[in-house]
Image (cartoon, rainbow, N blue to C red; front, side, top):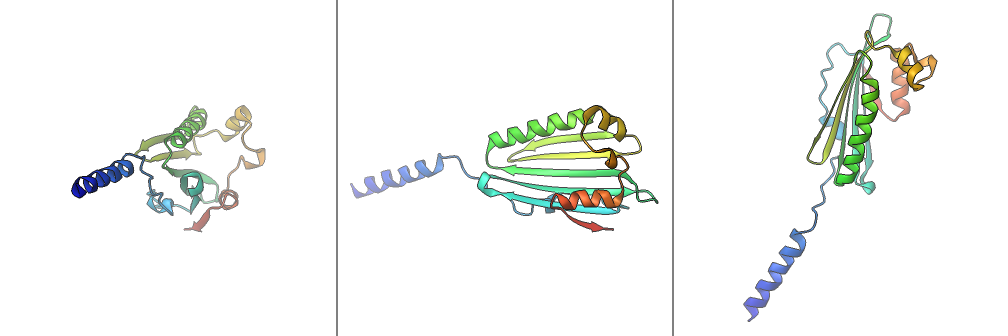
Length: 169
């Protein structure tokens, strides 16, 4: 009888703990896992935001190339959002898709969004020799006119103001 009770108790414990949704351990410093070729880049910025209490973390990496006059020619960025909440991942994935879709209508703007397991990853590449930032600004009212001529200093200042740590190459 004791063996039967012990078996039932053990089985109940396994059932009760095994059937609940398993919490995913959120990765810290998620930007460390972002790989972008930095060859000939002028600036690399990374940021990590820990919203564990809201069940998600965000890591970003921005790699910036400039011409001889320190005007930005290209930016590649990647962002990873990790969450144990599928609804939050749905929201992030939809938000990123909608925002990047608008910009992708302009030449020189390419993006890719992937979702695997408990992560949404976005990668954006902007080639400013093709992307008409002035036209984008006029049609979308998204940036101030003073930001039309992006320089290394202005881009670095923007990323730092968002909490990124930047390193000049």
